[in-house]
Length: 191
Image 1 (cartoon, helix red, strand yellow):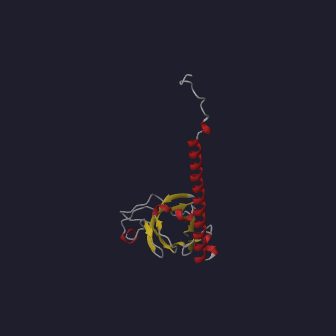
Image 2 (tube, one colour):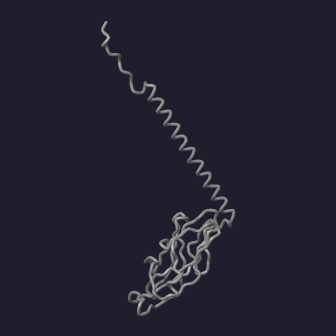
Image 3 (tube, one colour):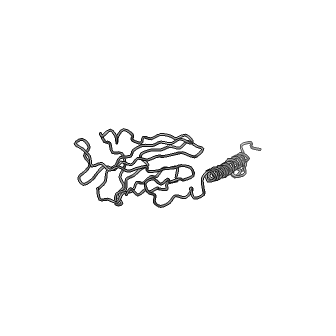
C-alpha cells in the first residue's frame, strides 16, 4: 500500500479547536452581557439614592426658570443669582445696538460624586439666536470674577460671572446644558 494516500479532510466545524474557540467566545460574550446588566443595576441604585436625597420633583427639570430660582437635577444644582447689563466704555465696545449681559451664577454639587463644570456649557439666547458667554471685559468688577472650568467635590459650590452680548431689545434666556443632566437644557429667563 501507498503511504502517500490522502485521508479525506474534515470539515472546519468538525475540528476540536474550532469548538473551543466558539465556547470561549460565548463565555466572553456572556460575561460582557452580565457585566453590562450589573452596571445598569448599579446606575439604577445610584439614581435611587440621589432621588432619595432630594425630592422626587428634583429629578425632572422644568421648561423654564427665572433669576433666583434653583434648577436641581439629582443633587446637581444651578442658579442665576443676578443679571447686570453694561453698555460698554471706551475700551469695552459691544457690537452696534448690543449691550453686555453679565450673569452671576452658582453651581453646587450635592451628589456623592465629583462633578465637572465649564463655561462652555452656557449659551446666551437672544430671540432664538444662541451665542457663547465668553466675552472679555476690562472693567474690573465684571471681569474679576469670571467662571472658569473645573471639578466640584461632593458638597462644594462655585460662583462666577458669565459675560455675553445681545441686542438691547432682545428677549434673553441663559441656556445651561451640562453633560451631567443627560443633554437636558435648563433655560433661565433673564428679564
